[in-house]
Amino acid sequence: MIMIKNLHVMVDEKEVLKGVSLTIPDNQVHCLFGPNGSGKSVLISTIIGYPEYEVTEGEIIFNGTNITQMSIDERVKMGIGISEQRPPVIKGVKLRNLLNLLTASNNEEDYKNKMVTQFNMEKFLDRNINDGLSGGEVKKSELFLLLTTQPDFIILDEPDSGVDPEHLKKIGAMINESLQKKIRLNKNCTSCSGNSGLIATHSTAILNYINTDKGHIMLDGKIKCSGNPLAMMDKIRDKGYEYCIQCHENSQEDET
Image 1 (cartoon, rainbow, N blue to C red):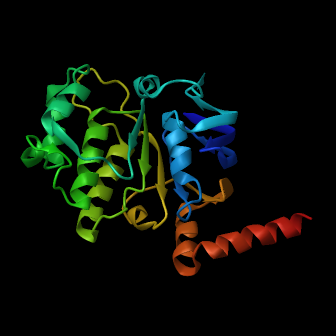
Image 2: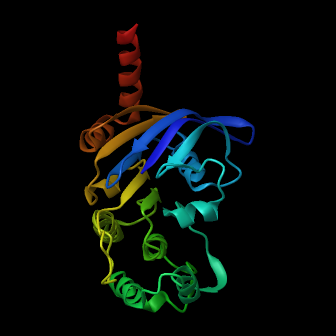
Image 3: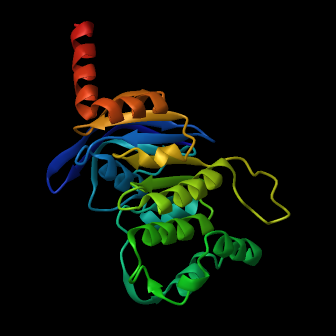
């Protein structure tokens, strides 16, 4: 599905990503752990194609195509979707209008209505986007818009950030269901396998509700180690990221 090879990225003339390599196969969901400032959001922003993130070396391959120099809209059309860490308030634009714009090309009115009901978004449709919403409501609205576009590869940047426990459980259940299968009402759908995805988090709370296949720990712009996400999550919760740093240093000493 997606392959990142030796990716180096500059932001404001500073190298933030320092040789990231990562492969996420079809139908797998990986999680990316790391403290604030480790490079998680920069990696995600680079995958989606924000122009201020300059790739100086390496490449991003999506479904066999090199997308490293493609624009955001080209990547979205190929099937990449993102849920932002801090979705903006958009005054003067109703949620209904944006929803209709995003779903104009798929002709699946029944699917759209199902998603509105499933996410309980009826009361927000005629409000300005994210205006006056709580942290949990903003995250739910952002996730709702993402999933109605039915992307093949879903990127979630800190979906648990600023979300209270009640909303977190609901959001986690929605994410998990959507990742496990493509919820389509189109009777002509012949392939309804699971989506692939990348979930970045530093608190790990959202992973109580989402099934993931592999975990990666990012520190100082590099992926330091990969493995069982649940085992990693337990270590991080128990000992923090300092444990990961020490573990990595010990492994380097053993190699020498």
